[in-house]
Length: 498
Image (cartoon, one colour):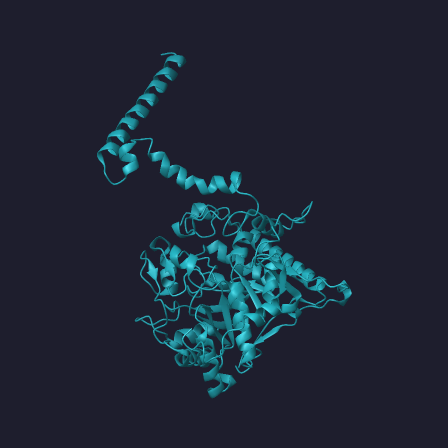
């Protein structure tokens, strides 16, 4: 048989297989009743699912405008990518952002901005002045809560090493303290979720001895009790069974290969009295500054919390409150919660800081802002709104390679950030990505400081509400301090049930 005859035979064989496959799919589609499109349009109807899955990728690269995508648009992602790679991220020919949209922050530059030599480094923030081990946090931006389990091993390693290079903290997320959180040598905030991974007993309740062991690590600086997070306020964390490896199961004390769903609240905490009791217990056991993370919706309970603190004494107050926006969240969550439950950070942060200021607890209780704060302008806004410290999660995910593929919950992340499949993790080198983490943070700090200097402030933590105006529907802008005054929460007797 000649070469041409062989190729002809192979071609006919392949075409024959293709025809048989089409016939099989036609019969299979026409005889089933689960999918009406495939039943009515055999074979051709299968393309609908394919195009639906591919649609988000085509939109990202070919059709969406730079400022159009959600949750993060191409302009934001490109700024982060260039910053992380140490590249030049200046832009030509004017802003592509629509500055007339309602809610857009416009920073108020002063006539005589600070000279570089007049600027100063932001002072460190003291957490836990009444604890045996107060923590002084130097960085204006830190790595927000992302669990090992939700993130891959090399992703956590890159973040830990990058945080050490950059001099910021790394929050463990609610998945327990993994060795990869510690290996970089950075400061670590241990987050205790409702399932109490890593410090739970057989019944899922807090085990004091295990918590003390975690707190004894010199890198662990604070304990954060998670009440709620932006992606799913009122619902516990979700870790798909495909991600529960033997190692993760050992760290979290859960069964291998089974989906892990945390309770929707701590069984021990059903009111503000019990919240303070629990914080006191954790603080006594850990000997570390202790606070809680939540999402604002109802807000009357904050004033009730202040009432109890007034009665018990300022020592009883949480050392910090981490406020997550209802529009935040790296974790997978039901769309109904992610889209429609919990106040966005731009509403909630001024509300919380205003209540604490009015009740005389603003200096005692530090406020950490978290929720879609991935660019310098958003971080600067948070400081104007009263934050003491800013956290971001997805900004750092982008810095180590995330492309917003929206596959985080499937264990098929194409960049290795949120998958435990070894072949997909191959391109995520922790040493290389750690440097990008540090580059991104360095650029964020410089640009936030640049905004502050333009406004006449010596550093980011000196920014005030009067330094930013918020765009209104009538085309004008209003200073944030005036908006905060106008939208001041109701008097305590009016919002007890709010």
